[in-house]
Image 1 (cartoon, helix red, strand yellow):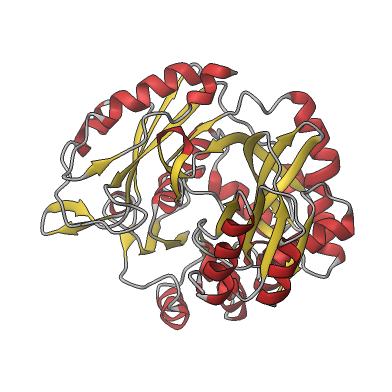
Image 2 (image 1 turned 180 degrees about the vertical axis):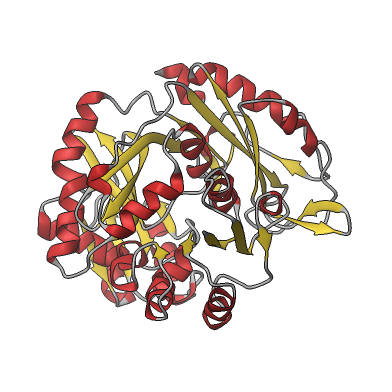
Amino acid sequence: MKVLIVGGGGREHAIAYCAAKNSRVEKLYCAPGNAGIAEFAECVPIGAMEFDNLVEFAKEKEIDLAIVGMDDPLVGGLVDIFESVGIRAFGPRRDAAILEGSKAFSKNLMKKHGIPTAAYENFDNAQKALEYLKTAKYPIVLKADGLALGKGVLICEDLKAAEEGVKTIMLDKKFGGSGNTMVVEEFITGREVSVLSFVDGKTIKTMTSAQDHKRAQDGDKGLNTGGMGTFSPSPFYTKEVDEFCQKNIYQKTVDAMREEGREFKGIIFFGLMLTEEGPKVLEYNARFGDPEAQVVLPRMKNDLIDVVTACIDGRLNEVELEFEDNAAVCVVLASNGYPLAYEKGFEISGLETFKEHDGYYCFHAGTKFDGDKIVTNGGRVLGVTAKGVDLKEARENAYKATEWVDFANKYMRHDIGKAIDEA
């Protein structure tokens, strides 16, 4: 089997790591890939949004399975294009990827089908949004409707901040066309939990839980990022919470998409808030989270390719997902200055140390080769992941492993998984 993975971050490195373990995979490609992925796959210099070039490459190499890891190509309809030329692809088609591609759509879907979420209003007119915000209760949340690299969410403490937020999203278009429509959402509080799931159009199988840390600085301060670290499982995701979500959120979402004529096959990522009133959906993503994939996939006992194939074939009901009875923590090593301005091109040392230790992983997010050296090539550079018998040990192991690697302007949060101590 020849497999093509589309993307070039830490999530795709985790996918490649798993895919390479399948004995039926004779050749693995990744477009565009990175220096870490190159250990498992042949990286080809084709961007994730270069659809024509990707299809031409897939046909030339007679690819049997394409796995689309990133949100932009999914929302843009890459799976549809692959399928139109006879290439099996994993991920939602364009009409289903709207679940992530439009927050306004997903909020309306939840409201229509009785899926618990925060109260909201959608606006495509900045003046009407400003008028509404004068009578709103604060704090309040403003969300750019479309994709914004996980950064298009603003929490506003008062009217002045909200007015500035409308300017940022809808008038200045800081997030581009994603801000043409804006969701104004009730501010809800509680523990955040991420639950990823495999979906084959009808059946949904949830993976182990995780929790991400979005803010750039310790203590959840600073700007929103693509994710500074994560841990799995979440001690706050109890059996009772799972039972509620299975009944009121997970299957309901899959059924709702089918009823809307948008059958979903692929990964649904549920971003949940565990409020005093019960779990509510904060957001949906239509792919593996990054860095959630880096702690969930290493704990999965199942063969990833087998599960992906079952989803495409509509046989997910035959699969029993199994996860190791342990824990994992991922600490992102970033370039100082991320998510704003930062320098890149610095040599990374110490990567070989990970090959000497079982249960430790170094997933590359922003790296490239410079001759025979591996250098930094992004804001988030590496995802250092470690397992442990429990979350406390996994956290200690992950932070120990961050000391194995070094590069100029290395930056990280020091409190990833600190919520574990409060559980």
